[in-house]
Amino acid sequence: MMKEMKLSKNAMKVLEARYLLQDRDNGTTEKPMDLFRRVARHVARAELETGGSGDAERWEKIFLGMMTSLDFLKQAGQVMRSAGKEFFLG
Image 1 (spheres, one colour):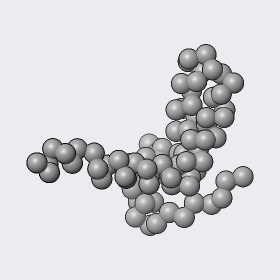
Image 2 (cartoon, rainbow, N blue to C red):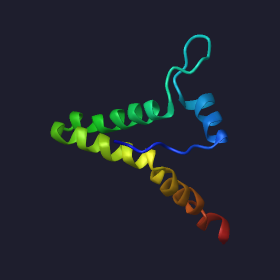
Image 3 (tube, rainbow, N blue to C red):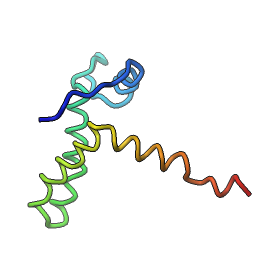
Image 4 (cartoon, one colour):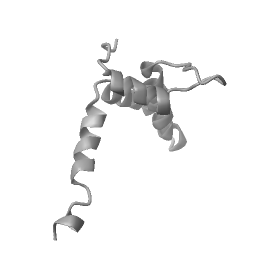
């Protein structure tokens, strides 16, 4: 079982405004964990399309774990901090 995520108020505002599914009245219809599950499942579907159907569920769990532990964001932040710097340091 996944441990509960600690998201700041600002993170929740961003999720609600940009990423969580909404109904026709702009009310959110999912929680952050639902979002992460939906994304992990979708990304893992690549395994099904490449013939590795047995690995799709395993990859979904891996992706979900990375997102809920926020490791994915930590890694993406490192990439975003350093990507393209060589163009501006010269």
